[in-house]
Image (cartoon, rainbow, N blue to C red; front, side, top):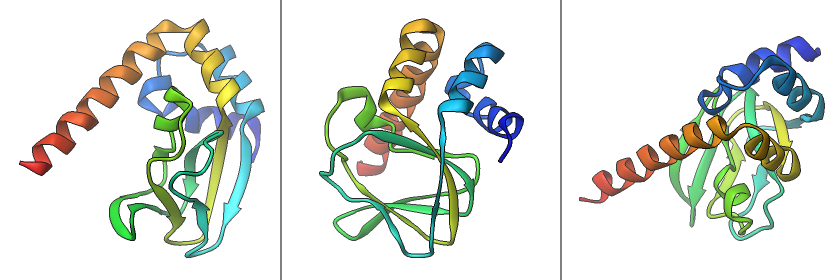
Length: 139
């Protein structure tokens, strides 16, 4: 995948859409391309979290104790929460189909947040909406 393709994918992430082009290019250069086969585990619950992922192709299921939590597709990201609190993974993830992912390491992610507070503001809004959605589902 060429750099401009990575930049365009990253630009689609709501929390990065306010980042300047040079920042997106830097993140794109740092992002690692990874492939997973259908039903391959990407990470396990309680494992160390070093990377968040953006789905380039395919779909990924996030699950907890073998119960599906969410199925994500092209253009969506996962594994973000653990990068924010430096904790372990709160759920597991596996490829539903053959997948191509872009992995963004924790150090790169943290540098984005430090250099661009507007990204943090957008990210907090997204996380708050997710939490509200989860609370509403439990009622």
